[in-house]
Length: 118
Length: 109
Image 1: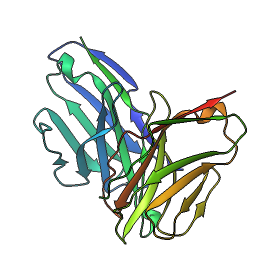
Image 2 (image 1 turned 30 degrees about the horizontal axis):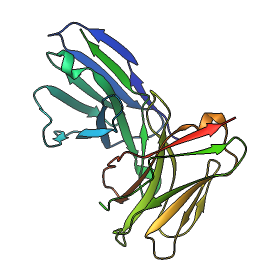
Image 3 (image 1 turned 30 degrees about the vertical axis):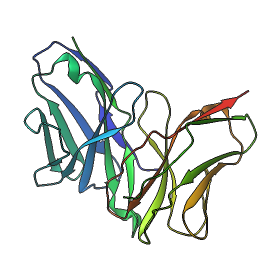
């Protein structure tokens, strides 16, 4: 299947700092990317939908000023967790929608970023 | 998106077929059935999807009932590496994926 690269795989930061996570689609151009968050023993929760060249659409309850999303090119979306706090510690996963699937589109996922805020 | 119901867990012996059921009785005509799996501490992996016909690829087979109200993912020869949480998701084309709790498959030696 298609490859989505996510970096870094793990980050540890101090409370109050900002952290940027990158998501790249390596073998297709993705007009739409998604950011998910997963807490321990829970399922993935969609945070936002990122559309190339336009503002992201955030799910209810997700603070857009805290989780900044930029989708400046067809192969790169970034998520910045601003002023991170311990409760932001989680597993963040991006995905990209492959536009070549015809009537049904497949989302491919990155390997995830484990964020630990001290 | 239509709701899906999966048993919380199941196990099977290595080398045997694993049949993972999913109920989606409220599926609408233009919604697809997608299967993903997530191995511990990794991102989800796409397995297969279908609309109404049965589908097969190198990883698995997807059997969708004629009324489309349920489906079964079949891993023909399960290995220990197939131990994971498997998610059955029903959604329209171009729609976002909403993950439920999935079914935890444990493959035993």
